[in-house]
Every structure is written in C-alpha cells, then in structure tokens.
Image 1 (tube, rainbow, N blue to C red):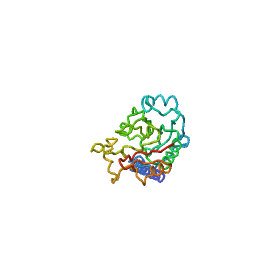
Image 2: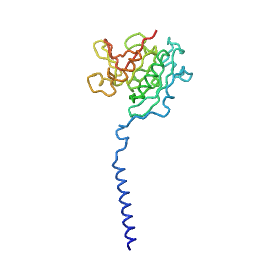
Image 3: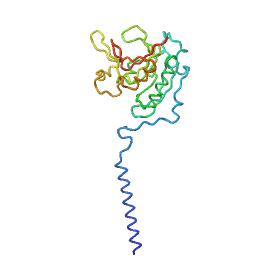
Image 4: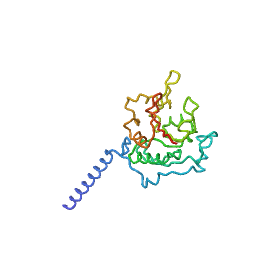
Length: 239
C-alpha cells in the first residue's frame, strides 16, 4: 500500500513538472519576436568578401542596362565586388556591386568593417536588377554603385557613371535639390526623410559609422554639398 502511494505521488510530481515546462515554453518570448536579435556573422565570412574582373555572365546582365552603348568606361576598368551585409532583420545577406577598379579595394574594406559592426543595409544588388532605373532601385532601398548615367537634370556623367560612387540605404537618405522653385526628392518615396532633424531610422550623418569609414577612405559625402543634399551618396575623386 505504501509503495502504491509513493508511485502515485511520483506520477503526480512528474505530471506537474511537465506542465510547468510546457507553460514556460509557451510563456517565454522567442528571439524572433520583433526581430530584435543579436547579429551573428556567417561562418567563414571572410571568404565571401572578394574582388573579381567582370565575368561574361555579369557583363551580359549589365549590357544595355548599367553598361549602355555609349559607355566610355572600358569593361577592363570595372570590378565586381562580392560582400556580405547585415540586413534590417540582423541577418547576413550576400551583396554585389560593380565599381571602378580604383575604388574596389576601398569598398571591400569599408563593407567588411560595416559587416563586422552589424551595420544594417537592407539590400546590395546590382542596379541591373531594376533595369538600371535609378529611381526604382532607390525606391526599393537598394544600395548600389556603377550605373552609366547622367546627374539628374544635367547632361553631365555622374560619379556613378565613372564607377566611383556608392549610394547607401537611399530611401532613408534621399537626394534633395531645388529645381525651378520646387523641391525635388529622389527617390520620391523618400520625402518623409528629408527633414534630417527627425529621429530617422538608418540615417547617415557625421556621427554615423558609414560616414566615418567612407571619409577615412577618401570619399566625399553628398550630405556636405551646398547647392543640393545627397545623403545616400559617397564618391571618390581619382586620377
């Protein structure tokens, strides 16, 4: 009788422990809630940062898009840069850029430091995925480099057309210019982020790590321009 009673008590104790465990599991927040998770770098992440000459496969995507028929920059002067970046969910993503070979090593080092620091960049895709339409790429908050095109409202080939400029998180860091008495904002859906006195997510300013790294590598920031403000834009003057 005593043994039977002990068995009953033991079974009841086990049942209680199981219930407590289930309740704890249900009540405990998952690390995915709100996506507020600690960024973890990918295994062998250093191997994902590299520079290559423009392959036939990549050049085929570029032709007629970022590399237009009248492009004066030789293919041999451009480089493909493969990186990893931390996206807005703190997850590692592959990224790719095309740039002038004169700044390729700079970009590799800058993006490597940004990745190590968990600096969030939503997308880093070739602008050719947007048909090389800059507005579409910016509106999708895509960070990109080479695109043989002119500066808005001019006939001047932009620094992007030379492959020496990069735009970072352009939606939150728009290009702002007064044109014929009106304010032009690119991308257009970046208008809510024109007022830089606001507490804006992913805002680039003088205290931002992205700004500091690009300046250390000799780039100029469009946010320091006088006649216009290009908060997304970094460019480097080369010989």
